[in-house]
Image 1 (tube, rainbow, N blue to C red):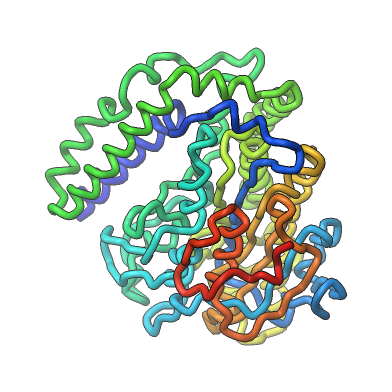
Image 2 (spheres, rainbow, N blue to C red):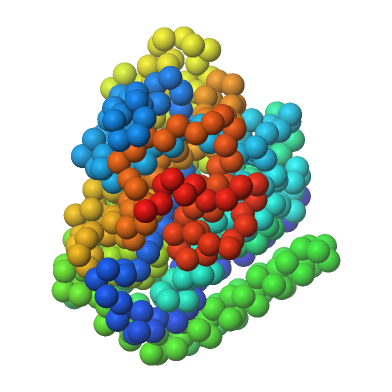
Length: 459
């Protein structure tokens, strides 16, 4: 069992390290940039928080445009007119009598029931909404989508619930059984897109562009194939064929040249600053405090949107059942997961709320960064949809009801922002995803248990 797991990790690590630098998909037609100021490219990002938030401390007072943020949401005050706080939503397909976390993480963006399993035969029930968007607009950018996080994906079985921990490490699914791999290191994430466009920086060697990544990991692939069953062999074959297809598309010189032409002087200056920040962070490390690392990853997503390297991104603040140490926050001494099981103890609730507020501060950081960058006659935030949420509400009860959900940005002036909207209890979260798909000109798209788009949110 351990040898099997090691071989699989080694192959994925080999693919990740190599693919992350020179290879990813999609054409980059110059016609994309001929749009008028009133029709800018739309972007989507999702920032996922584990362990939920305490509803009484999360929910704003008042509804409509006449509302006041709670203390947890107060960091969003500067962008109040560009966010929607949505209450009453739930993902009914996350309800499980076996589990409190994994069934509320893996399907956060699929809104479908996951298959209970203790091995790698995972199934999240459907393609995630971010990947549906990537299929729709990903051929217009160099990278169809980006998946980032902080924690390494954990394997093995959570014996308390009988689910593989793999479900706790991803929210993006290319197919129901194909999770999208995440990058967790700022240097790799940054170099993958921008290394060759930084003034004065030694470019990556050309050889990796000329040799197939599949050739580089051929030996590991053969070892792994001998250890897999027929079903997993077929899945691996489909994945490797997709990688080869990616190579053929991204290796077209015209695509790389088109992307390079989009690196404006302002973007280039920001790339230089970002490169130095990553070096400084790597030199001194962040220790327990992950704020700098999180903001580096957020800034890389912002740069990707600004340079139009990609228009779809997801970021996970932590895996399911995250027990991250938040003692770097004043007033916090316990781990995230432990304080989420507060049993209404005031001391635990106070820490739980401080941790939730820290997550909102990082979300607000991304919104303000996007809002500071001009885009046509608006800002990048105006042309974006930036979702923040968790797969459960009160962590003490593992509740799937009244999820903590915020949508930032106007999605290309498609959304009536600056509101707190209170929906009826048990309103499907999938309806919000249908609304976002509608805003991306996919109005006929049925999604999970959604009952149609939330028209009241749309202009």
